[in-house]
Amino acid sequence: AKLLSNIGYAKKTQGDLEGAMEAYQEARVIREQTGTLETSEGATLLGNIAEISKTAEESLQLFMESCQIREKTGTLETQMGSVALSNVARLLLASGDVDQAVDTYVRVKDIRQKTGTLETKGGYIVLAKLGDALVKQGKLDEALRDFRASRRIREELHDWETDAGARLCESIGEAELKRGSPQAAVAAWEEALRIYNSPASAKGRKKADAAKAEEALARLPEQITQAHADCAVDTLEATAP
Image 1 (cartoon, one colour):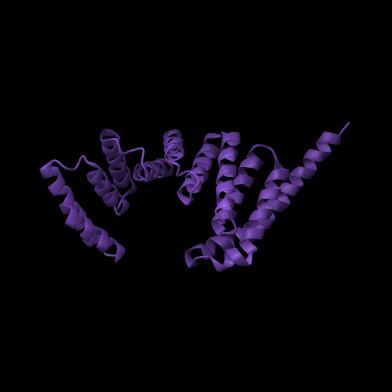
Image 2: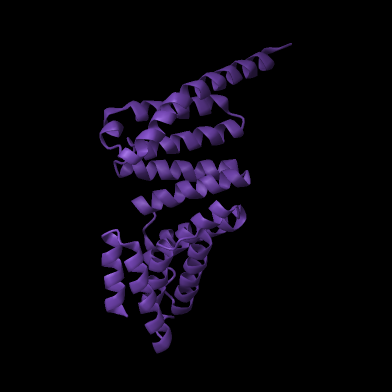
């Protein structure tokens, strides 16, 4: 089973997803027959299958099964366990189950705090995703808390001047606007615009992200103009007799 899992991983890295799935499924059958599926290695195997499954529903089911096995084997509160749970949360959010997604992301955050892995790249990604889910719940203050924590870790790891950092600024701006703070939204969006235009961000930009960056550069000025108008309205209302 271990050899087949290694073959599956090698095929996946080569882009042969069909071959990878075939090897992984053979490994799963062997583990089921030998009673070794409900182990840490079995949980990892299910996660590998989930990553290349053709449907989101199947991926979610497999990641959840992987997490259940890790819970039974006492390996959920580990880095591998937090990754599996993060995938569960991501797929729950995509399916529209916001409440369950938030609960799952909160658990991932707790595990990373316990294992000392929150102040890492994986940690700041989880915090940003949790913030996005909290915005959907309408819990804007909590969302901004996690967005700002994500930003702080990015800055400490010298990973702020990137397109991902700019997107986080956009998320902060959207949360501030929904909270009724257009001035704070403007500040966040102006920083996003600056980062998108910065040489550091442009240098590290992947081809796949170029279209997203161009769309943001076209959209943000209009958003900023509208938010400035909202600020002006707020000022007039505040000074009206």
